[in-house]
Amino acid sequence: MRIALVNPSWRFEHSIYFGCREPHLPLELGAAKVLLERAGHEARMFDGPLSGLDDDGLAAAVAAYGPDATVVTTAPTYLFWRCAQPELRVPRAFLIALDGRGGTTVGVGPHGSATPETALAKLDADVVVRGECEEAIVEIADGAAFADIPGLAFRDETGAVRVTGGPRATVFRDLPALAWPDEWIAAHRHHHHRFDARPDGPGAEVEASRGCPYTCSFCAKIDFRDRYRRRDLAPVLEEIDRLIAQGVTYVYFVDEIFLPQKPLLEALVDRRLVFGVQTRIDLWKPDMLDLLGAAGCVSIEAGVESLTVEGRAALDKNCKLSTDELAERLVHARRRVPFVQANLIEVPDDDDALVDAWRERMRAAGVWANDPVPLYPYPSSPDYRRLWGEPDGRAWERAHDHYLGRFARFSDIQEEHPLPLPVLEASCAHCR
Ligand code: SF4
Image (cartoon, protein in one colour):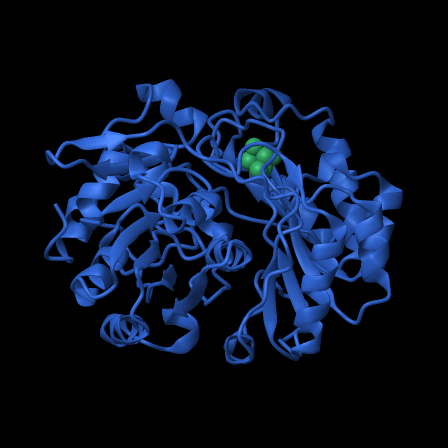
């Protein structure tokens, strides 16, 4: 089969979207492409943000390719599946522009993973994949009946929606090296979460592991990127070397939790590359932080979340260190890495004076701690399920209403006042 893999042209006006709005590599599509080609299929990626095409231009390019199936993602890249925009107006707008010219339409992403029937209806796609999508896309391309592929939602011949089981998890460990078009890399000027220097060449995103062994209450990963899997080192290094050969000078590891991994760090020491990670500082001993810095890490984003043991316990952080020990570890990291951020979230037990004093103490040591951000109870998080049980068809609307009603003050990364979900999705005329 010939498969089009589409990252649509994102826009986020009045969205609660927390993620970065710069273009990033659509990793889920890159991974699907390499597995499709390994299975003997033809696949091409189409990326709105990196190619500068709007919905109509992207749809025309896909139609000219003449695919048997068109896959569209509902979040900009794997990096943001855990904090996706709730609204589906952008992928829906692309499918409207495509207007039936792309063969079978397949929706993938965090929305269909948690609420498959709703995502199917809102996208008006032929099929939606639940969970990590790469292997399911290959099975669809292989021509298996939808009813025989686990983790799909589709309408049967009677028009009834059928869901063939829970979300998928890709093997991932043996994922071959991904490859990206030269022109996309040249257009990728953004260095994600880098603050120590201006970009001196193209940036890129890479996955060395997927998932996380922890279950923090606010973390939206139950339906995808959940179980921890470490990718084989050889394809990771092959992919990085390919990026370096294309001129890339900085990569961001999108791993949910970049755990200490000596062989990878040692392999990076001699490469002319700097990189950023998100991790938990409590899992890094001082000697490994030294190696992390020597390997070229210039940006660490570390989830501290709450400044009290009780607060961290309430969030199910399962953190073994005290707040002072966390602070010491952050300060040690800052001696080796030019930008270190401690992430805080709004927790009732953390009073404003405590937070202000801690932020000031960290700032004096060169560590940046954010103004605590409010929690959005994503349908794929334990918090959602604690509040309302398993997600039903209105899960995103319910989480959205809760969030808008509860927080009058929004985080400093949200510039516009967010709108209710039905209002956002009504800006795409065909969404229901
Ligand atoms: S440690 Fe990070 S990735 Fe893992 S569950 Fe907690 S917030 Fe999520």
